Length: 150
Image 1 (cartoon, rainbow, N blue to C red):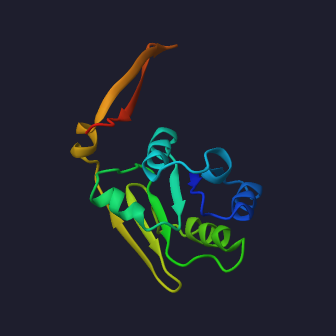
Image 2: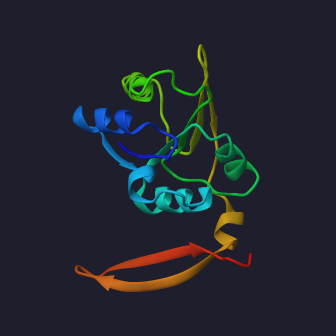
């Protein structure tokens, strides 16, 4: 499972998750200051589950049609210590009954809610073909980006 930590996730948690074998990239390290929509685009391109403390991601999914296949984990309470996020993610991923694919997972201090979503035709309608090319083995690679004027 691959994760994309939003820039509000403490770097200590990102580093700890990496140290115990998680594949995690960090917006705060790699792309600080980018818009939430661009974070969604990166998550889709890299097939990563977003970890965030930003409530805007629920709105981006359900009102604006951004629906990353790998899902979003929204933690409602700000961390009280730098490794708290890592502990939450480690606990969630060790639960065999949880799946994050096409799901908004909302973590509260004493509860967990998950809301599934399907792929959106609205999102596809707002995408434009940017580039395509052939890769070895006759596979076609297609890159799509949100239209800026949609």
